Image 1: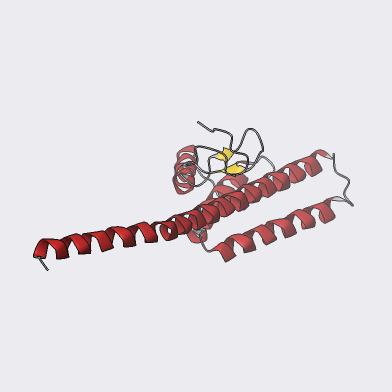
Image 2 (image 1 turned 45 degrees about the vertical axis):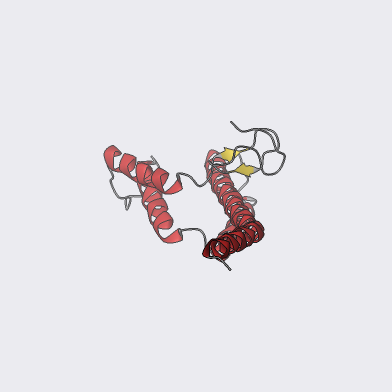
Length: 170
């Protein structure tokens, strides 16, 4: 057998093996995309619950929510938030350490800015708040692009089409 025939046979075997291995690579990529979409949806749910808690607190302070209903509603929202955070931790794709630090610092600064905050509140300048927000945005960049305008499901920055309904996002 000639040396060129051996090289041709090796090249042919290599091409066939790459062709047969390609579907496995595609499946792994699809699994990672589904996992990142799940994490994005959980983070969107977390943000929605946080906003609901803030609105509930604000409405209670304005007197729109009866005092007897407020603790139950707040406890229910906190339980939902806890469940979402547990799911995020289970996914283990969420960098909770740095995100929680930044979130805690932002919450601390926001409480300092509230007119009704206690005397224990830490004084933080506007520049420090802006730097904390910039750090938070940097951590969140590339994770979630918001929601599909058609079906309302969470989408990622790299998505060109909604993974749920197929609507073009660009």
